[in-house]
Image 1 (tube, rainbow, N blue to C red):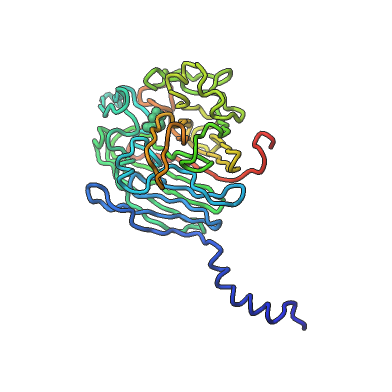
Image 2: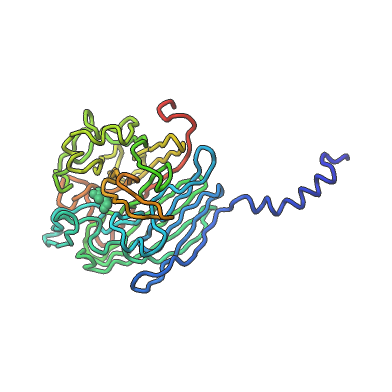
Length: 384
Ligand code: BGC
């Protein structure tokens, strides 16, 4: 039978085959040293790669997402997560770039709560309130990492044991966070925890995103849609009043896609006290069920991010207090150069009996799953 390819073309194919194999990225996990903390503890950097060559980098210090490299509309990889080049940058960080936040993500009023008749006192590190787990929260400790590839997807398992009374919280709490980077460009974060005494817990991830590229401008032209009809308004110190307010008729109505910058300077009391968007939205879905929290589109890059979660709330924070700190590759992160979508239980739940409970008891198991999914869209989002 006559061959369909000529002998010389076959020879070229044979010679080029190893190169072609090399050019196609394979899912995998790579581990490198990221340096040491000021106390001399080694920090590892894990690189999770998927079959598209898109990468997520995570360090064991604070279980922090350091970078997320995903393709734009033209197929070019770009980093959409704010971060630093070294451990020192993260040790000095006061904006919570990329970490797992705990034990209690967001605020507890006056750093006090009562559980089973006993009152606990926590650090008041934010306007007289407790924020993001206190002075040395989960963002500032070194976790134990283990990389693997499971069902073709790169995965990093991180564990941390928070001792009884750490930062004032009761109970020895063992926490596991699994980051999985799939071939669908989904960064899946699965959290679980167990305690040996009743305690409160509200874990989240505090990555800052800029879908046009980290450090290349502000996020005011991102189009945001949040799957929430209500939000939890706050007092002047960002503590929820307890009300669940309808977003309709307010600049917090993101039920249809809106530019982040379109209404951010409106003289609405909630935007004034929050210095912009810094609010918990009550998601239109059952707590415990994975469902859509938000979707964001950036038209110059064509990048889109959808956030799914099992949590009942999401904090949309428009980076109002970013202060120009120098991040990766010497790029500055000024005010509103990144935004966070922190999936969570509502702030100050330990003092708000009407909010979904954040109490974890011995024998119980805390779980939460959140997915940040990246894709690209051709034309403008509104023309879909
Ligand atoms: C809070 C902001 C705070 C930021 C960085 C957000 O989760 O809601 O008020 O400034 O984290 O600390």
